[in-house]
Length: 112
Image (cartoon, rainbow, N blue to C red; front, side):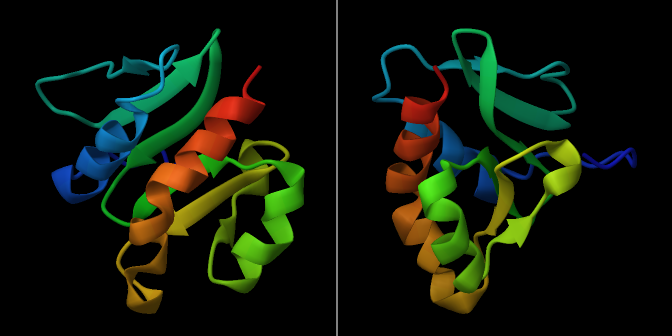
């Protein structure tokens, strides 16, 4: 995660929050709601997705989905740990925007 001061833009955080709404054990954390710098989503104390800035959603992606996601434009965020990818929401014909609920569900299911 970047150390520069960025905000979790609503065009990115909104779809993430919509995607986690139906997930029964998902919880949301925002350290500074007045500035909305970042939004983290976790389950059982395991963060599986977050947003900072305006590019996309970062997720802890199940191993079996990583190669396909990267081939389609996801960006490796290995500095965060194994399986972390950034899914840009506003490039490549918005393909990850349309798939976001499925991608978030997979990350949620793997966060056990």
